[in-house]
Length: 119
Image (cartoon, rainbow, N blue to C red):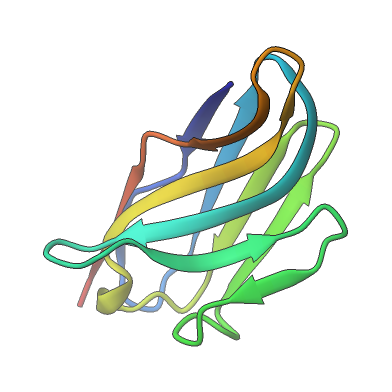
């Protein structure tokens, strides 16, 4: 199972970015999909996640600014980030769990995409 992320960039405070993550490989089904981030010197933290039933959960720090969504046909999860703040600067990682006909139950991580917000 492979995850390919894109969309990270350098943006000014108040700007917007959209991250994408596409899963591919021996995937039978995808359950949860989510985004985490890790800033320098800090632990990786949950940003947002979405279940197969499209229930969503957000970190308090991004509620009202970020929106997670998924396209089950494409196997892609998106993170629309608006009103970005310098404290949103981090490497963003995609996380997907599901079932593979080769691996069984799996949890995979993307390679990470850098988001930098300048003040």
